[in-house]
Length: 209
Ligand SMILES: CC(C)(COP(=O)(O)OP(=O)(O)OC[C@H]1O[C@@H](n2cnc3c(N)ncnc32)[C@H](O)[C@@H]1OP(=O)(O)O)[C@@H](O)C(=O)NCCC(=O)NCCS
Image (tube, rainbow, N blue to C red; front, side, top):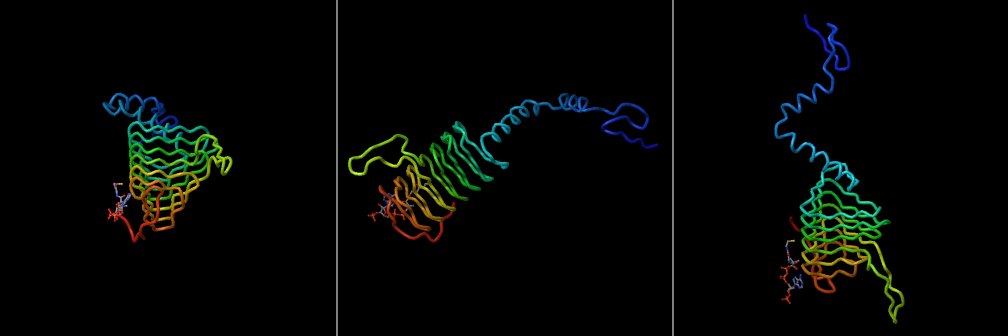
């Protein structure tokens, strides 16, 4: 005769059904090497969920530093942040990184107010993106300098290595920033800029990863 076993109670024969402890014991007994990494993996998952308001997979390289002083860090899925990047989101800051955007090693992003990075962007190594000058500054000619202003980087933007993106800049979708550029003014969509200060040097038809 077939006998039904209810997970939460007695079997038809009156024997108590195995509880959660039984399954845990079996897992622990036969888990082998699996046991050694399941706990660290769970902890890593929990920490990641805490750092990023994202239900999706975010790949972090070695030595990535993320300082969240109370602001918001929002990412899409498939975001990759390479080794030794430094991310600092201020108390009133918002940093959003769009789906499938890749950030190269040693890049530094500081969001005191708002930094929005679009989807499928490729930000190379050793770049700096900061929306604040960090300290108050007075000039004879213009008085007190504006301390912070939001940065917006459109979708499909490629930023070459060693580039600096400064406060208040908007980079249009599909644009390319040449290596070593200092971007202080807005960049129209699908435009190649380079130099210090970065100036338009061509129209982008498309670029590939
Ligand atoms: C965007 C980029 C690819 C444009 O390259 P390109 O169209 O082949 O440009 P060229 O090398 O033909 O250079 C054309 C002119 O622009 C100048 N130029 C090109 N890129 C420059 C840059 N980043 N900074 C200053 N000048 C630059 C060149 O000196 C050259 O000037 P000239 O005509 O007076 O000699 C290039 O600027 C760049 O950033 N290369 C690095 C890419 C890189 O590092 N990739 C790594 C993976 S992220």
